[in-house]
Length: 163
Image (tube, rainbow, N blue to C red):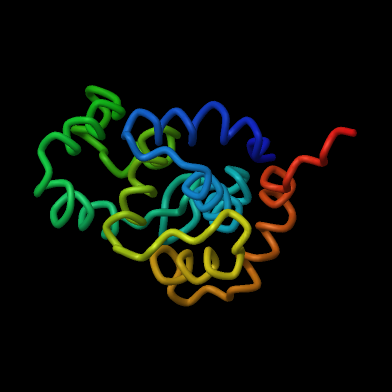
C-alpha cells in the first residue's frame, strides 16, 4: 500500500519544493506523476535499478551531486540539510528510500538539471515524455499516463464553479 497522493503532495512534495524555493503546481503534478509511475506512490520503494518513491538509480544520484549540485554550494547545502546526519555519510543512496523529502528534492533537481521546460499541469503526455527522458528511458508512455489517470489527475482537476 502506497501513500495517498493528496497527502504525499501536502506533506512531502509541496513543503520540499517550498523549502528549495521551487514551488509551483506543475512541479507538484510532475513529481506526483513520477512517484505514481515509478513506485505506485510508495507501494514499491526498492525496485532495481532504483530506490525510493522516484526509483532513482545510484548512478543518477551520484551524477546529480557530481555534475549539478557541486556547482551550486548553497543549493547543495539546502539538499544536504534534508538528509539524515549520520546515515547520509554511510549510505547516501539509502536516503532515497527512507527519507521522502530528500528523495523528492533529488527527483526535482534531476528534472531541473535536465533543462526541459515544465509543461502545464493538465499536459499528461508532455509530463510522460519528461518522465521517460529523465527517469525511465525504456519506459512506455502509457505506464506514466495510466498511473497519472489513476492517482494524480483527480487532484489537478479544476474545481467546479459554485452557483
